[in-house]
Image (cartoon, rainbow, N blue to C red):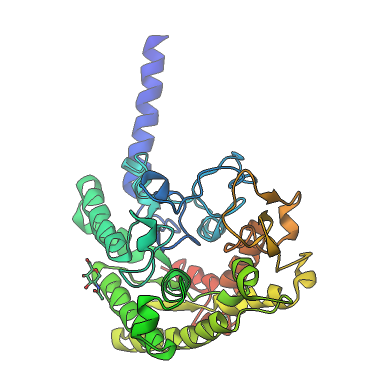
Length: 367
Ligand SMILES: *[C@@H]1O[C@H](CO)[C@@H](O)[C@H](O)[C@H]1NC(C)=O
Ligand SMILES: *[C@@H]1O[C@H](CO)[C@@H](O)[C@H](O)[C@H]1NC(C)=O
């Protein structure tokens, strides 16, 4: 009995080692690296001293465990749904101690709710992982992986990995427009601020390239003036806030131009622009067409449009999350995330430029 058991474990161990060694080279096995803010954070902030966390119910109410996980969603978020499409497990939060050994081959999620492009964005949330630190963690990740599979293969895992990054929203909502007469709004007019933020973003993406990223999906900002939080503060009859829409309308096209210019500089299609604005506007301008009863009222919250304060156990909670475009005052519901990810996968050039995820994955399988 004991003999056969250890035989069994030996075989299992051998299989694990084989899978482990072969995985980075195997077809379709591609690591996934996630950077940015609360739209893509899957739990890093739960390991930090910060107020920007989704660690209490009803967050996670529709997640398989029905418990909060740190995701700012009722269920799955955008990177989860991309992983699902690629047939992979979601990479673990980088700060999760379970992220070690062969789990590292799957990639890592470095995102942290509250952060922005600028270092001074989100200071009110205390201890969060700013984007430059997230990139440092990618270097640290590669070193840790190199200890297991060697430096050449570790570099290959990063080079061949898929990267998703979501940045920019907080530089407006939680910085420039956080309070009237904010330091940044006294320093810059909105058009000058946008130019500054986009030029800083360029430095960040260049650094990611230098660290080894070669396929990077870059999410623009959504329609920031149309989220329930902004409607609650600035809207009389449900119309989107003009100032924040102006910010989105200035930021997104300049982001696109910057990505094109970076691709030209690198001589390759490294950076792919996801037109998150358009993906959101589809269901915001015609929620019924997408099966939503509303795109103005958050499922979880309080006050007008359920848009004031945070989503907490005391908040109003809608019974059916699938018919709400917004889960909380700022973040889409899992159903809305699915609509967004559908366009990332198969959308035309107006949604994904210069190519969509299906095209990227089809190119991979030709190796
Ligand atoms: C932001 O912080 C990083 C790392 O601390 C630093 O390298 C970078 O220059 C800073 N950016 C600005 C605009 O100060
Ligand atoms: C995007 O993906 C679909 C497949 O889902 C494909 O038919 C289409 O041509 C792609 N569009 C672009 C612009 O790459």
